[in-house]
Amino acid sequence: MSSSVSKILGNNRLAASAPCRVDSGGTWDIKTMALPMEAIAPVTLNIAVSLRTRVILSPYEEGRVKISSQGFSRPEEAPFEKLPFASPFGLFFAAISYFGFHGLEAQIHSDSPVRSALGGSSTALVALIKGLSKLAVRLGRRPLTSKEILHLGFHLEDAVSSGKCGIQDQAAAVYGGVNLWAWHYAHPSSPFQREALLDRHGQKELSKHLLLAYSGQSHVSARINRAWIDDFLSGKTRPGWIEANGIVKKLGKAVQTMRWNRAVELLRQEMAIRRNITPDALTTVTEALIHQAEESGCGARFTGAGGGGCVWALGESGRIRGLRELWERSLASTKGGRILNCVVEPRGVI
Image: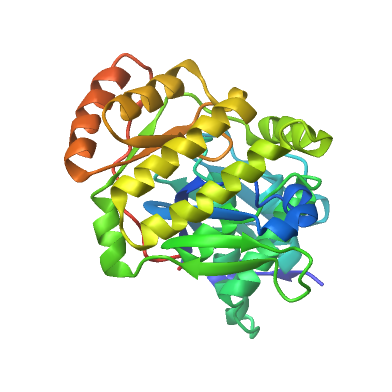
């Protein structure tokens, strides 16, 4: 059963937002890889950052749904009965279809560049689901819990992407903060176990040791992830993935105890393995940024599936300040390339 929400929204807009993330140990959150390897306890470490994505819901023509987003040349609209799940906005149309709403427009605004490998589409989806849940409350339904938002967001995206989706991006968007996630899809009650690594004081301290840059190059994660999964399934790169997983577990402990030099060493170790098992994650620009970070005594890594997008660095605060100046000079001649000013974001979706 569908419901028109144009009159419920009236002249008021309804908003929700969620944070993007940087990560280490990504791709292990994809079920195809994690499920058959549960014996080694696959993990991902991610850090929510204060680059938030906002979704604003406003009234629209009854029977229709409209979606627009910065970075896209034009909005898209369709009748509720024919919402296009295979379009560029298909993921968001699918979420609105799930709630059965029409007569609304969803506008997406993000602090991060489009396709920057910071989990942007999943973050937008989480924010949209939160907004739709708030709207559902006005219709007398109960609000979704954080765990329910994560569950719905992952399964919607996994379904629309035909099984090529992980869950770490949605997890960071829902919960915020700094977390080590263990993936166990065989467990009937939950596909993940969350270990919060730092309290707000620790998150504030970590912010002094982080730096994030956008390479100016957009990425498409589905194509890159597909090649990685194929190599993993064939056994070609599996030993490297297993070795990297052990390193990320140690990295989580180093971050938790705020041993930054140890964390730098481990991040560099994971990056060395990634160069071998995921070489297409690096571009000329991102490889140069990572090399500059390592030459400066820091560790650095591409975010998400790489292939453009962003690079994040970890190091002693003085070295991070020096690296910022180096990266700024390096990116000055790269169209769109820039430092993204941010800190660790303690809040998840709101």
